[in-house]
Image (cartoon, rainbow, N blue to C red; front, side):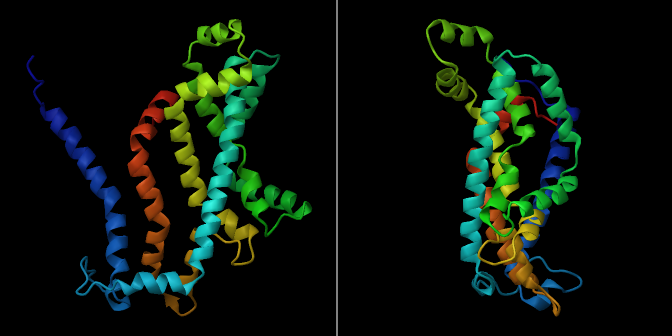
Length: 276
């Protein structure tokens, strides 16, 4: 069987993809380069990409400039809690909207779908006022409770669950399986790639969250890694090498996680219909 010959159009597509990849990588390469520079080299005009001497001590200074160990623990705890709770509620809701029959299902789904058009910034003040009435400000509850449900996750998982034929569901019911058992023993394993993709998106969103933790926390013992980057922005200026070193602490875990799970993420996004 002869191989398909590359056409000029294919070459153009590859060239555009390569250019896009370079554009995406440039900020990360600049971040890593600046993390090893001196302050003078980081603000030099014209800029230099490779420092004359690699200053590895910038990472030590960045780690010691603020209680990053506490920030790291807080980020891990909040990310795990919000992801686990949101995934649990989303799976249950997606199962209900995809397989169960109840009155008003389509209407409720459309109403909830419309909430996705509301910008997240509009919910900051209502959420803050609500949490303050329950005395949750400056607690872990404030960092977790607003994010234990997401209709975006429900919508994506519903699309994946609907790709599983209803005949499998009815066959399981005939064999005496309960809805709970069918969900966790059949439907969830069959939708593993989509669940991994949704999980990864939530992990990234929670890990990188800045504005909300900044608003609802007042003490270092509760703040997360992105908020901790403020330690390098003082009235006297910004310590760019230390800031870029600290930013590496924030980005590196997510980059490694994506590299290990990218196969499942791409497959899950394709299956759930979230392309583009």
